Image 1 (cartoon, helix red, strand yellow):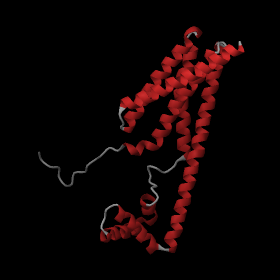
Image 2 (cartoon, helix red, strand yellow):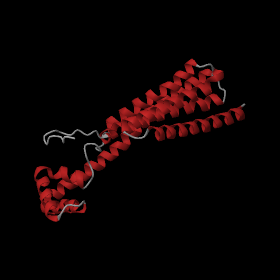
Image 3 (cartoon, one colour):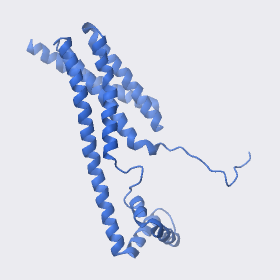
Image 4 (cartoon, helix red, strand yellow):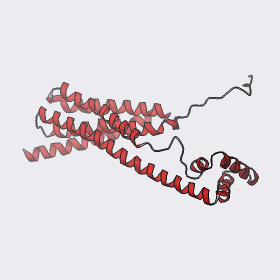
Length: 237
C-alpha cells in the first residue's frame, strides 16, 4: 500500500473539544426530563387533580431551568476566578524569575520523557514565544478546551433543561389523567434513552452503557417520587 506523501495533512477528530458545552447540555437535558417528570409523577400519585399536576410540571420546568442556569454560572465562575488567579500568579513569577520558570518548565518535560538537553531547548523556545501560555498549559493544565465560560455554561444548561422538560409537561396536556403516570414515565424513559445515546455519540463513547445508565437512574428516581407522592396522598386523604 502506498504511503501518504509527507506533505499530506492528517486530520484527526477528537471529541474532547466538545466537553465544555457537551457536559452542560447533557446534564441540563437529562435533569430537565428527569426532574420535571419526577415532580409530575410524584404529584400525580397523590391524586390532586389535572390542574395541580400541570401546575406542578410548569413550576418544576421554570424553577429547574433557572436553578440550572444559576448553579452553572456560579460554579463555572468560581473555576474561572481560580484560573485567573493562577495565571496572574504565574505572570508575576515570570517577571521576578524568568530563568527559574524556564527550569521549572524543563523539569516538567523531563518528567514526561524528554532528555535534559531537549527539555531545556523546548522550554526555552516555548518561553520565548509564549511563556505564560506554556506554563498555563503544561504546569496548570489550563487550555482553550478546559477554560471556564460561565455564561456559555449557564445558557446551555438552562436551554437544555427547558428542552428536556418540555416532553413530560406536554404529556400532561395530552394524556388522560387515568393513564398520566405510565405515559409520563414512558415518555421520560424514551427521551432519557435518546439523550444518553446522543451524548455518547457526540462524545465518541459506547452507546449501550450510556443508555442503560441514564434509564436505570431515571426509572429509580421516578419510582421513588411516585412512592413518596402516593404515601403523602394517602396520608392527606
